[in-house]
Length: 316
Ligand code: AKB
Image (cartoon, rainbow, N blue to C red; front, side, top):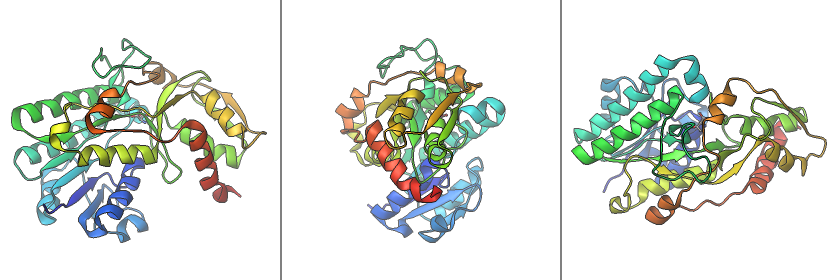
């Protein structure tokens, strides 16, 4: 079958690396990158690029028809911390963009959708350790409410209209290539930059705030892995739990100190502490491992080495 992929939100933290990985795998011309603004030179030169508003149904449909798109990865979203500042804007973006692609698939204009969910679907009443796939979900953030609602709609469109939509609940993602924007887990990227630049970091979460996290390479493997799996293997059509590692700011600081002994960290928790406190500490992802063969590879100390090695030149 002729595969043509559209990535919506290609300039974001995940979109940038996902676009590069899919272009490497399928060829630049098969992967159309799009975002609300023009992308980086690299994004615009390595394959087709379209300026596209994920909330504009007609515009998304036009790109899908023009390029004969078969699969959409919808990566545009407002993350947890920013969404608390702009609740209605976040709700509108996160829900309208999802309905646009779900309805295009329902009308048979595309065959398959990837839509990212998040550990933010869980809330303060969810069991915190090894959070099960099926459990209490009472998210207390705008972002979490939009992701949980989105999951219900994905499952509904699959059951009622046969839409092939696949999703995973991303933990916090860490990469040296791209910066996150507006999330509660962003400290886990910033800390590496500040460790190299200032040998000091002021963390907006408390030292013992343990959260599920993952190195970006593993997240990209999971995303492409679930999309490539045989449809019959995808038994869960809201979103799969996905786990890599869990750590808190004190542990990541200790991991950095193995390479930069003079590095120091201070804690000044802000409004993001409440968000983090409402999320799980670790995730049971046995369904993803069993159903479509998910495996994580990178641990905290391995990630620290990769991050410092790759960022060192920027700050030397
Ligand atoms: C955020 O912190 O909002 C995101 C997420 C866990 O979905 N990184």
